[in-house]
Length: 531
Figure (cartoon, rainbow, N blue to C red):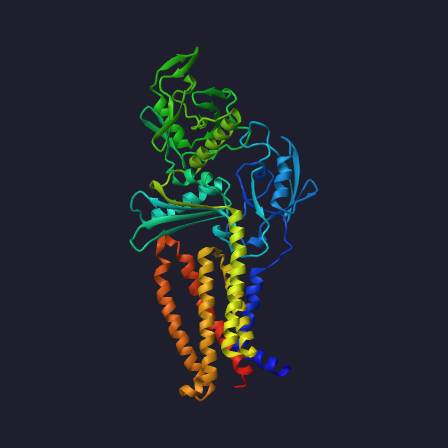
């Protein structure tokens, strides 16, 4: 037995296989004891952001994410425990948050500021136990397929993706994927996947072109983006308008928000020129200019601001923007939340500017985390059941453990290597990827049966030496491999990108099998059969 083991380990193909397997295990970095609330996103200028907690990079491996382990010396072992502590916190309370990367002093918001007191601006999820990224089908979230209103160039697509990425980052959403996609008919799409976000949080933000204009009469004095280098988001200069308390009107409650912005020198100059020739009028015994500053979002007037008479012809860079919630609230608290959400959206659009073209939502999918977790458990169970079924069938066919055991170990090793590759390249494990893994394992079983059959019966087919048997087996395997590659290649560009995960995982899987695991299986079988 010892001599057989040493003979197997001396095989060059087996050495390569073991090295790759070890690297895959290291890339997966499995740690079942990892607990706490991992940070998924940090809202700009929130209490957590001001305390120094940084938003994680979407490309960072899951096991390197910052994890909250304690708050005010109370252990945090789950997301439920995190929210229980945060919800119980009082306004203006100091929270000592301990994470895997440091300790932060976070002060909860006061009533009436840009966020509810218990919201310190963190989005969290259960601490990961591996570096395998779970797609929306497993972790929950929102997938949105966007279609441009008109045909766009590759440069415009890149600009749209960059703009959307900036919008979602500003909005506090960082665990996301934004990529261009297309189908075989030539239609162009943008595919956005955001883990842990619900449909209402992102739908309007993605679909809106976000063309913001401020006009005095018919003259545009500034727009969103480059004309506004700074937007205040801190509670000192943003939140509910103190001069206009919430009130109940037709249909429900309404509240006004207000925040300050800084104009560029060029925008301030245009505003001065637009107001220089206006007349001064009196409203409520106060002097104002005859024209108001109209705020337009996607060509729709959202608010009008009176311009004080002393601003006539002056290049003023610091101004205040105000507005109210579009949809009436069923209560004052509901109106406050709607108004602050509307303010947050407008701040984001002012910060990022407009998209090159208008986008339409072609399709939206929302998956709950509970459903994804249940599917993951079912997928693991069914996968193990399928492997067991294959082993039973192979044992019935060959009735030799020296064939069945290496085949079982090869299937399991191939799965680990595929997961390791996915963890290494940052590929999300979703339904399409799982289907690709199943196909890869299935083709691997077929190839191992071909190798086994040739090793056992190759002589009856005219192959007398081991080299000839091996050559015949891998001729069949390479022919099937080439066919698979040809079949999968079109799927990389079909189905608006939704089948890309399946095609890419299948190609990687069969390539790993043909180049690494199946040659190793052949080498092991050769030693065990004493050939």
